[in-house]
Length: 492
Image (cartoon, rainbow, N blue to C red; front, side, top):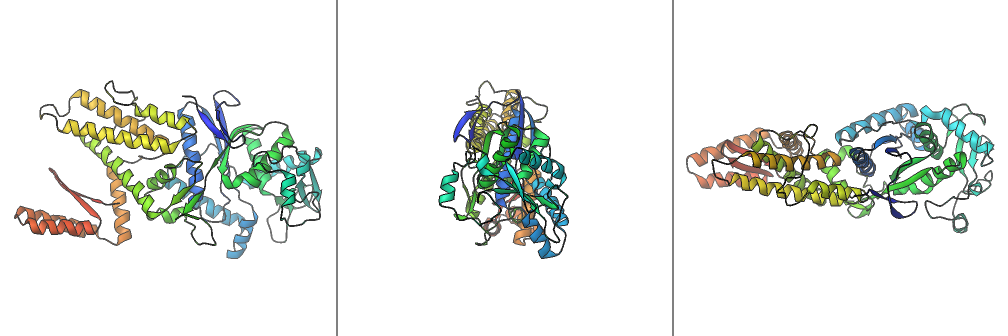
């Protein structure tokens, strides 16, 4: 199936054709590092992590760039509030960002430039715009003249005339048009500053991304991504700067992810409902958050609630429980790195092909996850059938190959989605530890109760055994009696 991508620029799905055959140049706007990352950041980063994974799987040579904005008004203001330098603040939150991303199993991009490392490139780009008469200096600042770029507004669908008619903008008499935006800011006392032809100062936000993408990827990109909130003014201004400077189409495909709401309300600091990644991961396994954010199409809004996320957690438990069954049946799980997937001759469906078809339709992870759950149900049925087989034929070669092959397809889907990265035993052990710590439950107490129940059953005191089971259930502990002994799991 041909890969199609929804292009925000043309507001339609389009076949994906790269500027250079077989190569993808992708730039995604990263965080402004003045605070901890929240779930909105997580969604954007995970969406483009999966796009990166899928394009790589599809055989493209992907150069993926995601930047850090490490100089900005917000960084300066926050640093002043807590009494450290802007550089120290930015470094603190960059390192915290990496901790969050590693926990979420996010792959590192090809390049992660910082704005402060590209001041020279930023200055050269501004000089080009001034030389072309598209930017102008005013009292140490430099502004981009929106009237000089005919295509201004083509991404957002906004027209300058309409914007001016209904605008409420702060009047700056130095601007030729109220919507001219800053490329270079004259520094204020105590602020970080760099030398420039227009005096000491620092770059504006929009010019940073244009300069960094040009330096690493060139004047024309295949994909530029970010949240929908960046369409205007940030991405609109990037187009204006880059196309005015270099005379080429800046980006072929603009890709934007939807917002995250919290209990049906927009996430905002004024409502006090900002959810930081590090706080969510104290409650939920990182793969639960990934699976939750990918369970909706990336362009659609997603609503975070504990009930919804608990349902996703229960679904992930079922997938890992199936992997645990396969591991027990085969002795080990298939190796996705060395074993090749092929559709079983007697398979009802080719779930891997169904998944790749979903992903090739504008990276439809929601549909792809539906395929994943279908594949898990199918493999559980196969395992049930094998376990019910005659004792002398429980694990014949055909059954083992079918189970291995179907499991391999499921694990390959997990690789694209960035989940199923742990052995089942490790997953359930980590979940146990986290939930027990959160609920202040002693694992030793649970083991003691299980032993007490075992003794009760041995002495045929089934009433007491049932009472202990009920007590454990009230503690969100589920037990399962197996020939080799009783195991217990935390209920999501």
